[in-house]
Length: 212
Image 1 (cartoon, rainbow, N blue to C red):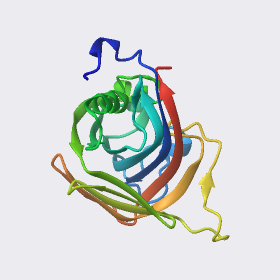
Image 2 (image 1 turned 90 degrees about the vertical axis):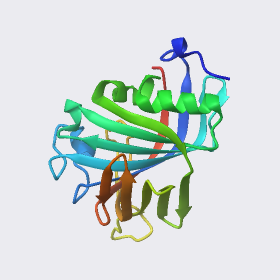
Image 3 (image 1 turned 120 degrees about the vertical axis):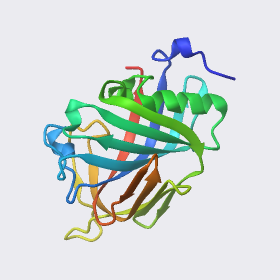
Image 4 (image 1 turned 30 degrees about the horizontal axis):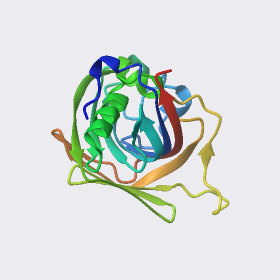
């Protein structure tokens, strides 16, 4: 059943799970600590991201167990907006779950991801795809057909059993960000051809909700 689009922005939603991200920054992304006031290391940001939804709902629709892939392009300071974004929604999603996830990741559903509505000037689109999010040991992988092929691993610290974590931040994704790097970061989508092997990556446990 299709959702009532007149209700978008008022529907209660929540997502708990894990987010991974790989961008073109040569070292750990400065946006985490500067909250977008410091430019990316290359002066602009290109990134792919994967979200594993362990528990979630959009209104009465259960979205638990689904995955989402994102493409992000930011021309300068994150806080200045003018972003471009695209979303790949798990092909297993029902029609209602698909619409709900598009509303969440376009920012229309407000709440935690509502900043997308403000910062994204061009939403390139959303489409169904086989979105696979895998964890093997400490490695995380995101595979979205031929569009995104990524794998990231935590950066090793002095104690090999402890990950390097930037904690207690005000970053929009979540307060605790694990420092990681990409062992594979390939994007072939929407006319973009990116390869970010060895570049900055992040792992974050997410607890998002809306519309407030």
